Length: 510
Image (spheres, rainbow, N blue to C red):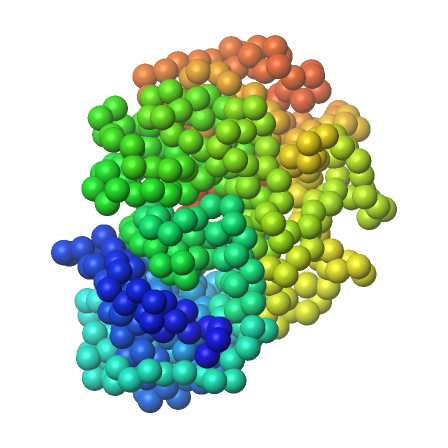
C-alpha cells in the first residue's frame, strides 16, 4: 500500500522510536511505532473477522482521548474502512440520529460514555457490535483488550485503496440541525501533512495534543503528521491546565497547540508561576484571534514564541500560519496561506476584492474534503462554479498578503444599518486588564434592529463595573459598535475544542 497504512510504512523506517505516550492510562502507556502498528494490525484483523468490516464500512468510536482513537484510525486505514469519531458532548438521541445517517455496525466506547451507550443499546441503531474499551460494558459487549489479545498480529492491507478513498468522517460543529460529516480522504491527509511539514513540524518534535479526537484538531492538525514524520505525540484524556504544564516539562514537549481560552486557563493555574516551558520551540493558537496581552504575557514571562493558525473541518485543517516573528507585528492576523493553499476575499458578487476590503474568505487547493457524507446538496451550497470553497468567514488581507478574520458571517449583526463584528469588540475588551474571557452577540432592539450584548468573565481578584468596561470600549471603538449591555458571568459555554459557544448565549436570550 502506498497510502493509507501510515503505521506500516513508518514502522519500516523507525520501528523502535517512541510514537505515543498515553497519559490517560495508569501507568502511562508508551508505545513505539512497531508496538502501535501491532495493535492496529490486531484491531484490523479483529474487526474483519468478528464484524466483517471491509473497505468503505464505517466504524464509530465514542470515547475521551486515548490511543484507542489512533488504533482505530490506523486499523481502518489497513482495512480501507472509515474512522467515525462521535462528539461525546451530544445527547444520546442526537448520537442516534448520526448513527442512523452513517450506519456503522461497530461502536467502540469507554466508561465515561456508559450512560449514553446504555440508551443507544436499547434504541434502534445500525450498531450490531459493541466494544467497550475499559470497565464493564453494556450487555453483549466485547472487551477491547480481549479482542486484541485474540486477534492475529499479521499485516492487514487493503491493496485497492487509493488517495481518493475516505479515511475518516469528521463532524462539523452543527450550529443548525444535525452536524454535517466532512469526508476526509487519504489524499487530503497527505496534502495537509505536506503543508504542515513545510510550515511547522521537524523531525524529533514532541507534540502534546489537548484537542478532542473527534475533531480535526485532535486527529489531523499535528497528530497524524507526527506519525508520518516519525515524531512523538503525547495524549491527554481531557484538557487539564495544571497537568498540561507538568507534561510540557516532564516530556520535554517541543510543539503545543491550543485555542485562546485554553492559553488563558494555563495562566490562571497555581502551577503557572513555576512552570518551565523552555522545551517548547513554539506554541500554535487557533480557533479565534489570540489577544495581544496574552501573547505578551507568554513572551515576557515564559519566552514563548507563538504561531497563529487557522483551519477548518472541511479544508486542511492546516490552512494559514503566522510565523512567531510576526506575532506582535501582525497581531490579530492568521498569517499567510500555507504552501499548497489558494485564498481569496470576495464580495457579494463573488468577485475578488483588493487589500483591506472585507468580504468572504474562499479557498481552493488539494487538501479539501471530499464532500459531506450523504449530503451532496449541502456541499454544493459551499462550492461555487469555479471550485472555490466558501468558508462563511468574513476576512481581509493587507498589502503584505497577511490575512485577518473579521468575524463569522453568522456572528456579524447589523445595528442601525451598520455592520458590527463581535470579534472586534471582544479584542477591545481583552485590552482591559480585568477581563479574562468575553463574548459578544447581537440581540434584538426595537430602534436599531440589533444591538450588542457582551458577556464577561473577570480575572480572579479583579473587579470592574459595566460602566467602566463600556467607557473603556468608548476609548477604542466607534459609538455604534459599543454594546448596550454587559452581563458578568462566572464562565462562558466552551466547546470541547475550547471555543466559546455563542449559539448557547443566543439561546439564553430567547
